[in-house]
Length: 183
Image 1 (cartoon, one colour):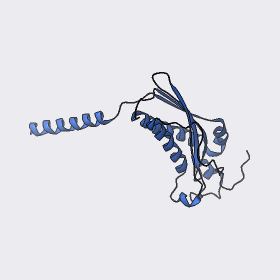
Image 2 (tube, rainbow, N blue to C red):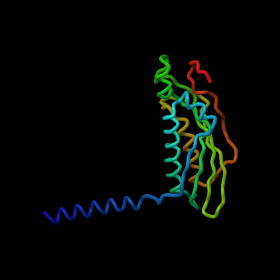
Image 3 (spheres, rainbow, N blue to C red):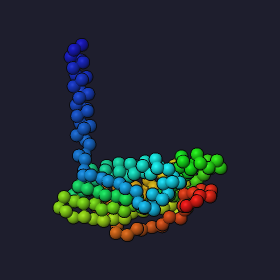
Image 4 (cartoon, helix red, strand yellow):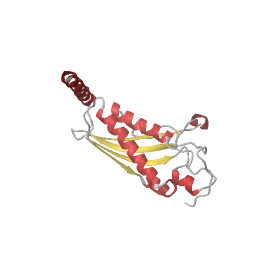
């Protein structure tokens, strides 16, 4: 009985050890801040929403940096310049009785940043994604299109290719879903 328990414990330890080795080492520091244009929208979207967006971007980019092709960045400073939800945020739903989780709009996000490498080289970049066709929004969550923009940022960090200008369509909606909002 003891031999079986020992073998089972040893097997579990080996599996956990292998899983720990399979994880890439963490890369440098990733910071995310909210840009002034998006700070203005915090009153409408809710501070918690912006905090969650920043955390999502941070986590996605940190994972991508840890698996970067080529040299790994030692520091990545990101700014979420703008973001537009696909569905009303929690605060918007609570404040406006006519909205529902079925309300839908075109969303997206714009992110800029600077990636710093160990040799001191700095690479500024800009990425954005904004959906242009409401047909593509089936099944969208509150921040689906912003998440797609964050994927583009993570891909850029992973591949080491950085755009110096925003590419693609810009924002086409304001995320207010048809209700009056005093800006």
